[in-house]
Image 1 (cartoon, one colour):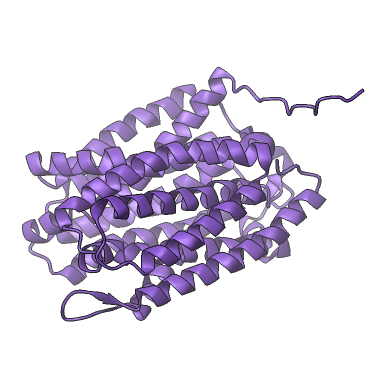
Image 2 (tube, rainbow, N blue to C red):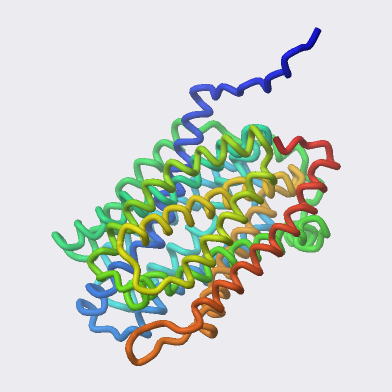
Length: 415
């Protein structure tokens, strides 16, 4: 007599768990939107503030530098407080910085406001990640990460067009005031509805925050996770800085058609994030990551070798590429969330967030060294950049295999 294979029990989220997932996703939405909104406002900002492109570049990059620095500075203290209080403190600072951007009368004030926003906003993501790991077991963490990852796409689809619309009506200050306003509402939700997150406080064995930080950045298993994060971000972001220029100048797509590409791609990315998370929990996080990586490498090869291309094909290629990228990011985040011990989780996440910020800057710098723009506007060596990205993806697949095996040896199930 044969028996049907035993089905894996389906985890049903409670009402409070759904609230926490929605809240963390919304926080990510505001943080990402605040970071991304500055670039599309560049033309208006440079005109209204009478600043050259170099000064505008500093306004963009100072956020990343501040965020990366604050993550390292906060890491030693990240496991010593109730995560709810820590989240409320740093998110309040982020709202203040965004509000200051919304009332900045000149370039120096805007630069200072962006620094404040980065100092506080750079830590919010790591605290939110630590809370999600504290409250949700690894068996369902793919679904949680999938919904949080969808916030990135939502900011692109909903936030940026709305921000540009407001800036056209009331000037470049309006989008920042909008983000500060909706962020304040989220702050009240944290204050009144999020329960204290304090289980990690019982596990603290290292009273000195600086020794705690040193312990975190020197542990071999954690260093392996940091290295994988560096490769993930470097491989994932190297194509982004020149993506729009390549689409316009090499593929022959008019500039005014770019929002259509981003809109359609973002809508698909919103759907793919939760789906990739569910697949990660059901069939295995490393298996889904490998599938997403192979698809991404194939699409990177196709994308970086395109010439004049019809709009519909550009959209298809972008959509499939982002399906591959989302299928990498969601399971890799879920998998690497199991790397740190519970006592070190906040510190590990803070350092990891800093590495992401710095790696993004390194990726942009490396891409700029490889890609060359000709006098006609076309980009050369973009195919070489594609090969570098594919190489980084291959190395990441190997590194994540060892992390995956290490997690399993510690008794965790990755599916």
